[in-house]
Image 1 (cartoon, helix red, strand yellow):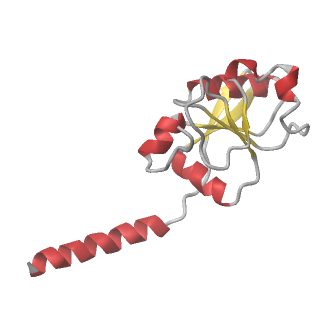
Image 2 (cartoon, helix red, strand yellow):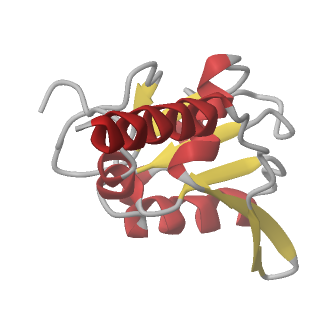
Length: 141
């Protein structure tokens, strides 16, 4: 019993230490016709959301829920249309983070936006599925 308690204590301390370790947000660059956007992991996005300084866009259709602090919902296949572009920052250097259910629709949206000259596009790799697998919640399912 004593060994079990010691093991449990050691495991608890290890998990606590891991949770306090800050995640460095570097992402992975994806090249599109000479321009790039950045794929970001769920843990990296969680770090970014703590000091949110970007427009956060859900591009999944049909609606399958939101990640907390989502600013806009724009259908991935219509993001380049003027009525939806007008909802995005006029400054093409402003950071925009996109996500969908699995990451494929948001990658299509990221491609479209960088082709239009946006320079600070981020994409949640793995989408909401990856977000949930990392232990985070989806709202409004």
